[in-house]
Length: 512
Image (cartoon, rainbow, N blue to C red):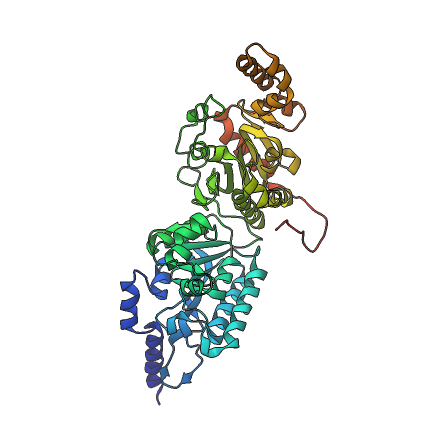
């Protein structure tokens, strides 16, 4: 066989691999509203930058013939926005994207290489699950992936993208990563499917209701991003990657500064004069951060808090804020988990944390206590205390009791704490405090309603203001709301060389 013949064979075998499961199965994938693995990669990566690895890996090797092209997964690396990223994408057109020994080995190699060079890794899940005929080899393959996800955690960003079925043990690899993205109508995640649930518990539920994108973005909180189409999902990935460093030893990329979308004058009226009225904290955030830069994480889950990423003067920052328009911005079980996770991610990857505080307390109620609000709230205290990245806190209005501490007060080593003149910092709100302190006086008054109103205002004037905390050194400065962005920029510049050492230990024991 001449060299030309050998090259012709190489080109044929490569074409067979790139054809995946064949045109019939590709057409079926498209009919279901889904792209193929290679189409997804080509749309995500910079044109011509993707380099595939383990192209001809296969469990059944036959000369001049490819039996299971790519073993149901495409792996490799390329650039997104000019920055190196690794990826593996399961190919549902080849043996249903099922995971066997070689399939798992390809994924593990991608994870190993990403760790070696210090680059983010994206995993696109679209699989029928374990390859049953391979038995324990398939189970071991999942275990090998789980181990690598865990070791890579906090070292390189890991993004899981659910673009088809993901069931059984397969769901735990995405659950171990930093972010999970899902597509409405085509993504499903669950441990046990509807048929098993029907047989064991009698509950009748559809795949979409059990583990669809809306369920995991709104109810369970398992997923972090919701897209209406694969194109939108891939655009979300590109956006998210732009805020993150390549690894834990690097800083996030810096972009040209952009003025905020809202004029700073709006900050004078964003908070209602009535302390009991809510408002959308996003308006406040968008008057401070670079225009169009706010990228929410967990946008549809625990919506009494807003977390995500943004840029201030071109620099990536993590955003954490109470949302007064929902539950008055109270901290509950779910939002505590949501905020604690965001804090820890930012701390892993050198992203400064900006906290906008307007919190009346932890949400009261029997179900919250039974559900472990003490344990969940402690996660926030732990995460903020543990974080050594620059931490800047802006108290805009209410800052009451333990929730004031949990939202990164100076006690938890906030580096810079600013308060607006509207800030109310106290053990509890004026109304509640007066009910406790002046209960007998109000009851004995000729006009209890008017007396209570006067006492509430007196308490607010004397105690619920930023100046007492400032006098104690708990507030760095009381600022004009219009100067919020300028103060944050100055603080970020000042803290750019921050170094903080902690006692040496294997790891802490965060309240789980």
